[in-house]
Length: 320
Ligand SMILES: Nc1nc2c([nH]c(=O)n2[C@H]2C[C@H](O)[C@@H](COP(=O)(O)OP(=O)(O)OP(=O)(O)O)O2)c(=O)[nH]1
Image (cartoon, rainbow, N blue to C red; front, side, top):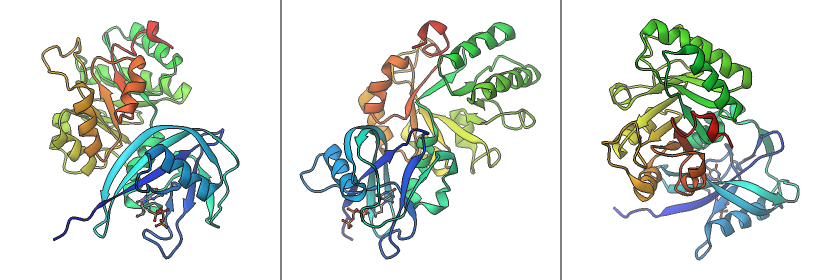
C-alpha cells in the first residue's frame, strides 16, 4: 500500500475585539463539505508557513496578516487523506475580513463552538481556543486555609484564569471545604477551578472541571466527570499523551521540562524532546517543570498551549 502524503494546511485563528473567532463554512461539494472551519488552506511547495497563512487569508478574507504566532499543530488521518493543521493565532492584521469566495462567515466565542459542526480534526483547536496560556497549580500551604486563599486571590489578581487545586495533604473533608472557598474566589473573576482529587470524593463540590494524575488517567477507559467538566491530565511520555487524546481530555500537562524543586529526582525533558512529543499529540499541551511566565514565548515556539507552574505562579512577586 502506498503511503499517503501529509497535506500541510495553514489555518488562522482571527479574533475580534470581544475575543470571538472568525469561522467560515466549507462549500458543500468539497472534502468535509458543509462543516464550519477556521479559514486557511494548503501550504504551497517552497512556501514558508507564515507566508502561506498570509496568502490564504488574503485570498479568502481580503485581509493582510502582519503577525501571527503558533497556537497548535494537529496531525489527523481522515482515512482518505492525512492532514497537518498548522494553526496560528493572528495577532495583527489590516483590512476588514469578508468572504471573498462567497463563503458564509460567523464570529463565535470559543465557548459557543459546537465541535460536531466542525471537521473531526478541529476538536483540539476549539479546546486550545478556550484555554488561557497560564495554568496555576496551587502551592503551599493548603493547611493554612486563610493564607492559602490570599495567595490564590493574588494570583488571580495577576491575571491567572485557570487553577488546579492540588492539596494531597488534606483529608477529603478539608479538601472539599477549601475547594468551595477557592471556587468562590475563581468565580468572582471568571477564572476556572479544576479539582485534582478522586472524582468520587469531590462529586458534590462546585467546580469547573477535574485534573487527573497520570496514574488516574491511565486507569480511565472513558472521559471521567460530567459533560460540563473541563478535564485535564498529567503526562510524562508519548503513551500517556496518546491516551489523554483518546479520552478527549481538554488539555494535558507534560513534565518535567526543566529541573524542579518539587521533583528533583526526575530527569528533565528539555525543549526539543518536549516539542517532538507535543507534535505527535492531538491535544493542547502545557509545559510544566521549573518554568515561570518568562518562559511563555519559548514554550509557545515549542508547540505548547502555555505554561503550568506552582512556584512560578504562586508568588505575588511573579506578577507581571
Ligand atoms: N482551512 C481549514 N481546513 C481544515 C480545517 N479542518 C480540517 O480538517 N481541514 C482540512 C479540510 C481539507 O482536507 C484541508 C484543507 O484543504 P482545502 O481544500 O480547504 O485547501 P485550499 O483552500 O488550499 O483549497 P484547494 O486548493 O483544494 O481549492 O484541511 C479547518 O479548520 N480549516
